Length: 227
Ligand SMILES: N[C@@H](CCC(=O)N[C@@H](CS)C(=O)NCC(=O)O)C(=O)O
Image (cartoon, rainbow, N blue to C red; front, side, top):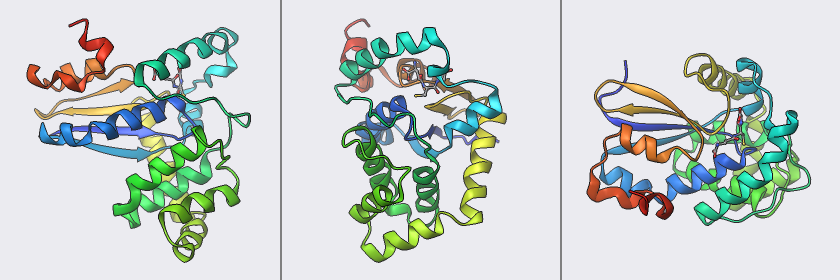
């Protein structure tokens, strides 16, 4: 049953630049949203699995989408005020960071948001390929001590974590209808929940959540100007 509380479940994969934009934007407004009784949960998924389950293909697999993409990502970066270049190693296999995030979300909840931010920043700002163990351990060490980081990296390769990420990814695609990232499953607090796709749909989300007019500063400036 949908919770009778306003809640944004954000299904993200750090391979997705639009997930980075959505994560940064929601993190920036997390307190303001909590003050409005809107809870946010960031949930790691494997975008490759969502693509496979839904029968979708990565945008780069379609020539027209691939040609359009550089225009869109540049506009999105300007809009959110977050500039970055797409690294040479893109696209890369995101299983390693997504498994580490899955484990940390369960077992080290307090450090989870910090690790999530560190993974996005390492990939998109510092161009560290997190499919490589030596880069992933460096990110873990920045949040945890060396001993804990080594344990997390090792444990994240275990069958329980693999299954958990697999199950959540399957649930996101098969039950919540996801075909890409960032995917959101949003509870309106009155027992209804709906999906939203993309970092460019927050204005629809605020409307669905029936946020009061005095709180419209939540919206990015370009949207505010048009209201
Ligand atoms: N318009 C969306 C685009 C998001 C997007 O293109 N996400 C990619 C991953 S980075 C995806 O999953 N695409 C699937 C699709 O477009 O069908 C936004 O601004 O966030």
